[in-house]
Length: 454
Ligand SMILES: [Zn+2]
Image 1 (cartoon, rainbow, N blue to C red):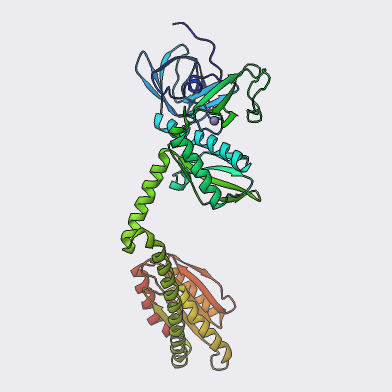
Image 2 (cartoon, helix red, strand yellow):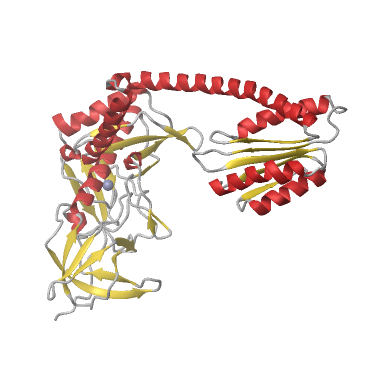
């Protein structure tokens, strides 16, 4: 086995020279270093590679390394650049000198190339049409992890964005979309890459400002991407051969402000548009069916529903208040009849809002008619059947009485937590898991011991 000792530098990798070489690429392992951590990972450098190392706004490729002699397939999760070297992250050791065969996850790579090349063209058009420079850009739909767990992406996370110094008008979005379509469908431009020694004098308009600081300018190569005569830009990424294969453009009307007056323009290209379209279509179909209407009436129906909801909320608040006045009157009558002690239990829709409305009525009367209500003890408890939770209030002029009842109830109902009313007033709590047993024993206690103690 002849050991290869030098690798092709980043800038001249096979993936950069031919973006469409996506499998059947034979090469040799140069080195394999163990990386610390759990689980153990290895950093593999190959003589050359078709797996693109993350850079220039383009995410890393994923793919596989197949050991030619054994046929063993090793997944490559991540490829990254260190100086002029491309490192492949794998989970097993591969002996230097081993002949291997590479495969790129081609669907992902072509999607990345469509977004990336689309960004080049869109940036070029924004500059030529509106003198708007691309301040930064970010590719959407890139898998992300948090603490080792993959974050699920929303359909709208597949939009890429370009940061500009201002928002685009509706008219400008329309114009730039038309122009993009012109170069995709009617007048496709050939995309070429020129390689240049960084020492050479700059003769075209491509600037060096985008070259990463840690890139070795003495031994490296500067790659300039030319889109017909429309644009030239230094970029290390992988690109399509023609603007035709960008395959389509969708620019969102949703622009967001960042850093003061800057704005993000969201767009997607190629197959992503169809995937987004499928999602949007499914959503529209479900909405059409639940509203029993056509697409164009959906917004009208939503507005109607919102209005109806507001009306019924208002109505519900009205009736809660009316009922609370009646309940409060009943409670106050009971206080007089049954020597200052009473309670209220409300199942099914016994919400905190309802109890608070009763409390509000009670407290104003108790305050106004202090002389008639010198001593009182009131327990208000509700339960919401749907959530199996419930509010509970103990109201008295005496902190001692409140403490006695709240201690008793807390010992009976495991999930009752609350506080307040140490010097009299209101103790308020919540039962976070209100079982039927809890309900029955509470009702029994209130009806017997509680009422009999005076
Ligand atoms: Zn590029």
